[in-house]
Image 1 (cartoon, chains in turn brown, green):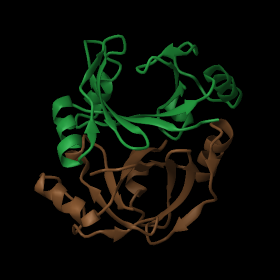
Image 2: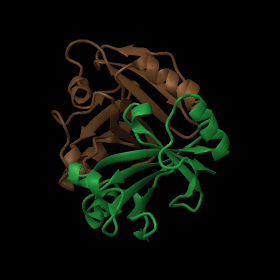
Image 3: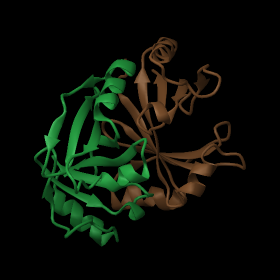
Length: 134
Length: 134
């Protein structure tokens, strides 16, 4: 069912500093920052040859990653995103397997403009999993 | 400098259960478990089309991931591994940029039989980074 790893998301306390670290220290190819107000984040993509890293920073008062940053002030790995060909088929298979889908269980349009779902970390080895239909 | 994302490592409390989750619930292609006594881990690879997930479980008394699992009993994302063409060139560039290399700073032979180094999480947005020469 799962295909490519679309991205690994890393929450960072200082987006400019994190971008400089990935660009200048690790020598990665980084994007400009992109504000996504409907998701409550500003993101910078680190484009690797086979996948990407998404550096995430809270945007606005009610950012969904605000609490994560309070608990992890240095930042940290936040989630992994796997691609699936059909998100409703994937969701129904996951629910039949006992996995919990976060929210109301209906796909939302994610940061890349494509349908996404998030799965409960307790059902996936303590790892928040995003599925994205591609 | 950094090339492909070689893998994302996830520490899991129950390797058989985690393997079943990745195989049966997420539909991934999983390997048999591999004991790596010199690294203090047993690992299962989830082979995605573009990269891999490494499920890690402690092996032996002094596993380097034992404390992580004590702090994160459900498991969790442990590190990301980026490929580099020359690990000594990478190390020297990183040190010149102020990044701390863990241990004695000399590459070790990693789980894939190739030279690896680990970088201090505090210097990389709270994320433990492994570099592997490929």
